[in-house]
Image (cartoon, rainbow, N blue to C red; front, side, top):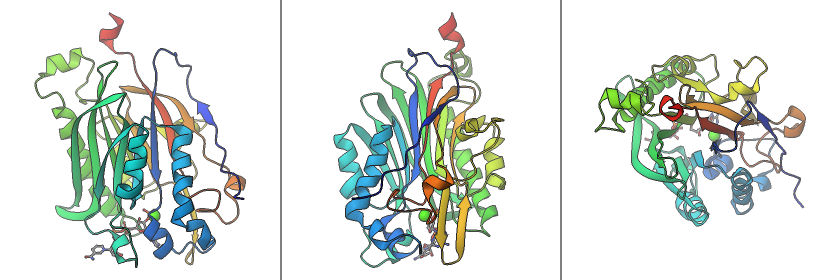
Length: 328
Ligand code: NDP
Ligand code: CA
């Protein structure tokens, strides 16, 4: 008999109309099985809580509790044997990009490289395009990747892009993360500008697109606190992005106090590292899944029998803002 799962409610951030079915987006670093067992050193997590045979059900349960339309995962090292087939049977189409030199491969009995995976509800969206990016920093190739898809809503015809990434971890690598972020933003500018290659600027503006291009959602474990340069880069980019989880704060401008909380031999680490960015002009945030309290997380922090990763899942509902052509 396992302890109960963390209960988390949604905070409604605006009154929303029912006719405008929002997009539910989920961002989650699920903790690679090989890293959790073989590298992380989560000294306060019982080793049995990390058994894949049980932990995989906790991960799937968390996903299916919220049933996102778009699911962005990092540290996926069980794509082909678990997440792709299980989620395909539940109506998700997906794409996986492994890290070129995954640290999972150093672990005995590993299950292959970890990487980023993006899943979407295939009855709701049609896939128009997929890009796998290997991020660069200062012109050099790095070990970090991103997946970018362009989707069309089957019901409304709306087109948007979603990206998932996992930036370089550890302190001392702040400038490196910032450079990776700059490269990703540059690539996203090109991809979102190209998504209607046949359209000239005048027509783009008419269908409700700004010079910012196709609406964009970027999910990731940025491994960066909001004080880091890469956060500021995303906040101030020409893509016009804002961070959905700021909506949880009273003033609407502050990120949550933590999205990851763990205890390693080197000490306790409680930090805000994960984000859902969205095009500010195209989307409104309708609801955000709350962050569990310190008491809910418990004294041994994460992962635990209650919760299978050291990172919390982020879930939000986004709806398209009314566009000029819709009001005519
Ligand atoms: P990162 O530094 O980005 O971290 C990799 C993983 O380690 C992340 O998933 C991260 O989790 C986790 N992590 C972060 N901090 C710690 C910590 N203090 N203790 C344990 N784990 C932590 O990795 P890179 O992709 O840059 O790869 C680095 C590793 O990959 C090297 O140590 C090496 O083993 C291997 N490598 C091998 C190469 C080769 O040629 N064989 C080349 C390059 C790398 P989170 O994001 O959740 O913080
Ligand atoms: Ca990790």
